[in-house]
Length: 487
View 1 (cartoon, rainbow, N blue to C red):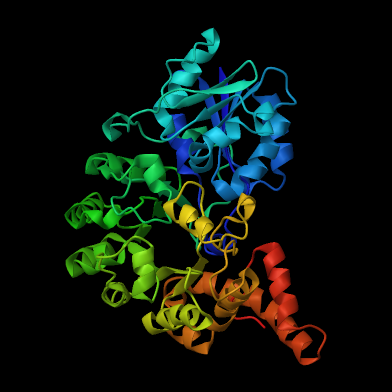
View 2 (cartoon, rainbow, N blue to C red):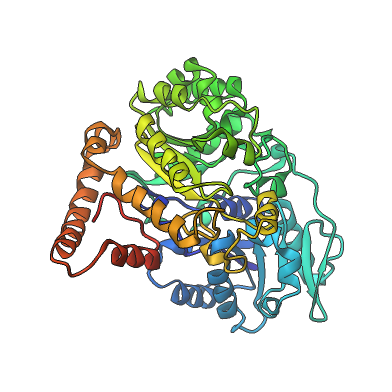
């Protein structure tokens, strides 16, 4: 059997500004099925014409089964890919990833199943492998975690228990058809996973529906082997995609020491972490710097205690100031996620988040807007409050677009306010203090030269009365690319 695994062409533009990383999920599945089928994988976000690429690849490799991985905001574009696949007689389509896992029942009862033959729910390595083995005899009822179509209806097998990570083989990076176009600042980048899951249970997060409130880890030796494999395939930059890698700071210390001992401290690492995990141990941060970590995304969440409590994080130490201080002592780039648009937020409350980002001197603040992701606890609460203004168009569920209102702000008022926060943050003070220019001066210069003409033109148009800030706001909302110091 010839299998093609595809990741979505859609990107989150703010993240794409600094990094475009390959999809780990399809690479991991490829590494766990390549002995039972011929598998190829591709990230469609590095193709100029995804539809043309899909058609060409299906024909060239005589593909029998196409797997499509997507998050919520990517689902509709991947459904369009599925429609293209179904133009080829006999080629079957399987959906997987966060959105299909969360919405499998709704998808199974929708017209979309005309283009979908299977859905793999949760972790895909074992389910996809068993699906490939079951297809010749069409005996699917024993494949846990699988939904399959029979007589025009989607049937759902029982869920699959969480996998033992010791049974998961290394990702198959040789299966990639597209090897260029991935970057982290100025370096070729790849992805590595050291753990799965998180025990914190934030109400806005979907991870619990994938893994439950669990935290499972790969052995340190396996992680080092994975990093070495990524480096052997050309990576100079590794992004750890763990849900919360600093839940166990002792393990994080061992990982850093292992990276140093293996001589893999000559490449660069980025990671997402909790503020409490980083603030808990300065020793770990010192080791991270020695091991080559130069970027950390922190879930700072919000400036107001009542909103932290609303997120389901009451009692969890935020420790934002201490965490940022430890990281900035080593000139590590700090990106911070801050969520506005909570039920009781006023204009002044939202601006408190802006003030917090300035106070912390975040190198890259990401001003998220509360998003009612499918099946999350917060979605149901916001719907019951009458605050969800876009319950159905999941293409806008990327954290940047406003899909809610607050008790004091309309959706448009909230969206415009967050847009203005991005405009105003990147000022001369930021230019003087950020760590990006120290770490990546070439990238910084290139991006600055790209942005200066655009924003100079905008300022001139405003000065001449040809356009207003609102005009540029609406332009940015159409493209999904937010201002960074413009207007």
